Image 1 (spheres, rainbow, N blue to C red):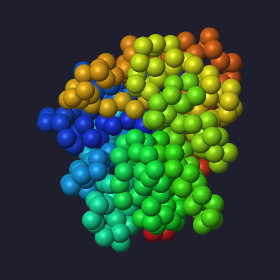
Image 2 (tube, rainbow, N blue to C red):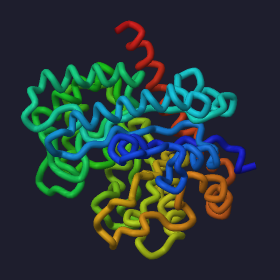
Image 3 (cartoon, helix red, strand yellow):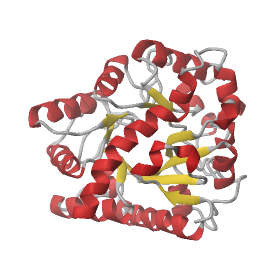
Length: 340
C-alpha cells in the first residue's frame, strides 16, 4: 500500500520555530505544519531539520540556539525522534520513529559579515560535530551575503569566502545545496567544484522547476540536470508561491516534469514547512494548499500521484532516492567523525 511507504523529507524549519517563538512546542500540531504529530501521521522516517538564519547581526547566536534545539529534540523526544545513521538508511521501515538530520540554510549562521573567516571555519567543524554530521549547507538564502548571491539577487555569484567554505565542506564531505542560490552563484559553485577538483555532493533540497512555474526560487532545468548528473536529488517544495499561486494540482506537474525530464531517481520531497503565523505579507497566506497543508499529507499525496506516475516511481520519490543520497554521504561523514 502507498500509505505504508516510509517518507524522507529533505527540508523543514521546525528548529527556527523552536528557537524563536515564545513557548514553542514541537508537539503543537496547530502551530506549525511540521510538528512531530504531523510527521508521524505522514509516515516520515527521515526529516532534515534546517538551521535557518537571515543575513543580520545575531545570526550566529540564532544558529547556536537552533543547534541546541536540535540536541534537545533528540534527547527530550527520544521516544519519537532519533539521530539518523547510515546503517538505518538501508531499511527505513525497520526503524520506527522520525530519523533526524540537521542542515544549515544560509551560511550566515556560520559567520556574520565581519566575522573572521577562520572563526567561521572553526564554527563549521564545531556545528558539524555537535549535530552528528551536517546533511548539507546552502551558502545563501534570499539575499546576498559574504559567500555569494541569494536567489533574489542579480549579478552576484560565488565570492572568495564562498570558495573557501566550499573547500572546507569538501574536506568534511558536506553536500552543497543549490536551493537558494542566484543562477550566478550556482554556476560559480559548480565551476569551483570542477576547477578545484572537489569531491562535493550536490543537491537542491527544496526547489521546484522554473520550467513549470517561472519563479526565481525555482531551479532551472540546466542546473537541475547538473544536480542529477552529480548523483544528487531535487526536493519538491510544497509552498504555494513556488508551485502555482492558484492551482493546487500543479504540484503534480512539477513532479511529472522532474521525473520525465531527469529520470525516476531525480526527485524526493522537500516540503519546506515553517512557522507562518507571524509572516507580515498577507498575499502569501495561505502558504500551503489544502492537499499539502501539513506533513500528514504524504499518504494521500502518493495515492493521487498514482494517477500520474508508474507505480515503480512512487517508492523512489517517497524515500528511496533521498535515502540512497544520504546513505552515501553518511557513510563518509560518520567515518570522518569517528577519526576526528
